[in-house]
Length: 417
Image (cartoon, helix red, strand yellow):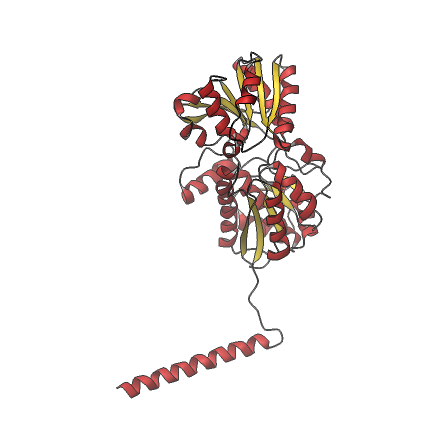
């Protein structure tokens, strides 16, 4: 019996060797089909640092888009898409280093991210634009991005803070807080939004008693808070990130009695504001963030997200990360190529009207329309995503408030109206 068993093993081994040899020979034959390489899509997200609260959430949006594309048969004749992640650490140099690895080592065809404007700008000017790699940020809002010398390789699926400043001014004036101080993180995001808000708030009849920058990751902000509180302001507008000073500023302000009424921007809309400070201490605090109105596209996306991951967290930029990834992949399909310039030139073709509307998840429909030569207009989870000549989109904004330990929407509105 043992000899028979050994003979069977030998024959099976020989059979396996023969099949392997035949397969190897077939691969060497002229015209033999070869396995298709995956297409690499880079994701520059902060998994550490001041914006780490948003990093994993944004990455989930990217992965969701890629999963839908792969399940629908992939791109460019069946090639699967692979997400390659780079941690920006919410810091410029690590962001540039991560981007360089994605482009030069990993060979990504395009990049989603970064999140912080202060990371996105150096990445675009030193890595992606010179390398002719299209980049779409889902969260970088600094106004200076609009006029950046990026040779049209940088886009964003979130509106500029030139709009958010106007939206926030309207919200604050509507709440009756007409005498405020401003404390902002010392980077492109903080400076741009502070300036935009102050200009728009003056139009609304409000007064900024003092506006100061702060350096991130300091042990104490009592000096800055004391100076601002000494101006007699009734509330503090805080433009910051939770994990590099924002929560510390709120905590120290409360402990020392500098301010107990807070107004926040998108960077501070994170669960840690409630869980780490305490719901009772931030009850009634309010703020602004970019947020699309409820549409068929956003409803379809939300249903798909919650089916896959559960309840959608109260964090911005998950939907815009999904849109950025989906637009880049549809642009590859439209271009028929992973060449960076070809992808760049196809972005507006798949995202802007006119064209047949394509909703989130409608990958097969988009692919069929592209193959038929029909123009498409991707309408995203985070808004229409109509790119202007600067790669910018307009948008609507949410007025939110903390009530009972939860972020509640007061209204979503267009600040230009």
